[in-house]
Image (cartoon, rainbow, N blue to C red; front, side, top):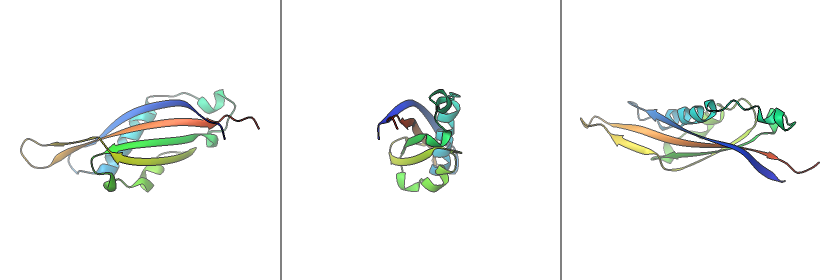
Length: 115
């Protein structure tokens, strides 16, 4: 397979009150996806289902991110998600909790090997 990255986009998501790392990650993915409206598959003669979608998530508590919930965000393609330590937990000034900030990088590739 000649996997070739064609596009990448970055996003940020937050959970202001509930410390919900999965929801913050979902918002970061959507933020990244909403930054582009490129009809990439069609431009190269591929089906949308041919898209190889690699997602990297940065969160302070990677184990608190439910990857299975994030996969449902993608209506087509072949998504895979990797979660690592990153993002930020910002303590609230009154000590009542933290604001969670999660970052996402979404990369779309195709198998460009000639059939």
